[in-house]
Length: 408
Image (tube, rainbow, N blue to C red; front, top):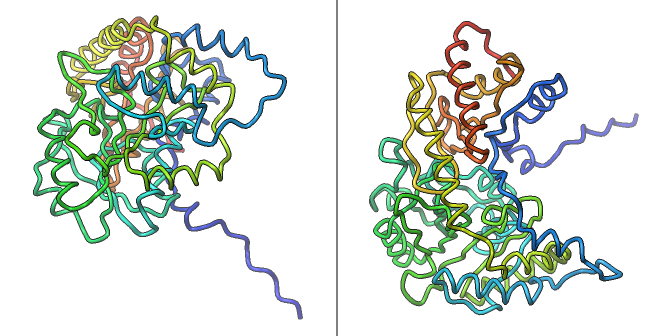
């Protein structure tokens, strides 16, 4: 008698990879939109600042008869322009120390795979950028959370907390500065502490500096690559998505002085062949253009931040601290389950046909049940839309106890 084949099952890796809290509720948003609702999207860091016209012009004028594979390490001219960009930001590099990646996301994955074996651990401040959880799961790496406190703006705890969390399996620290999702900008003392910790225990530092230009109120961004020499333990991951408003172009980079790291990442790059050809060529024009007014963009985001924070602080039961950078904040809401509330906003709540989409913060925590009553808000819309969004949030919170809780 023939035995039936066992049921087909996906890998444990696939099962353990968490869904993105940023995109998890998209099906509900799509349904609401199809029903005619206008949605203010505060769940995702998609700026509405116009992309550089030089980039768009270069895309339109791409004239090569074949869209061929680019160099696995990246377009040489783009890498040279990135050297100049980093020099303007006080970071000295050679083009061979820069590898262009398919967005900052690929740089994160490659950095984890370059320094960790399956079963190894990385320490990361919590709450943390959710994609690190997904990529760590794919790489078989365990992220160990370092708790931070919203009352002091999610700044880093003292050295003894890091020492207690470190084990023989710890291979690296992950530092996102300015931070996503909290908007915290770590000061020089905090970073020097981590640099000393990493050097003393021979650990790598994966330093995500995607939001380096987005700092406010006199805060200063310090790159980990500038904390003493040699900095062989530092891997910088970066992206053009935010500062140039090019999220859909998928161009990022990985930077290191460490030759072994660069050689390892190059092999990963060769396996995936190349980052997008047209976008890389167009990115050259964006990076080299002197017309990108970062100060103006920074000022605009600071205005948006102030609009959101002042509004949130005037909503009964909401707790939020003013972030120093990036374009996110984590707010504690007067609800028991922020994901249920965020779902209800999309399924049940409308005011004049409008609602908003938030990112439940629980998905940014590694600790079970962390951030259950928190949301991440991305203040990436123009101030007029942000004001309306905050009015909607205030109205929704007042109405929510009277409504049934929505569930996915």
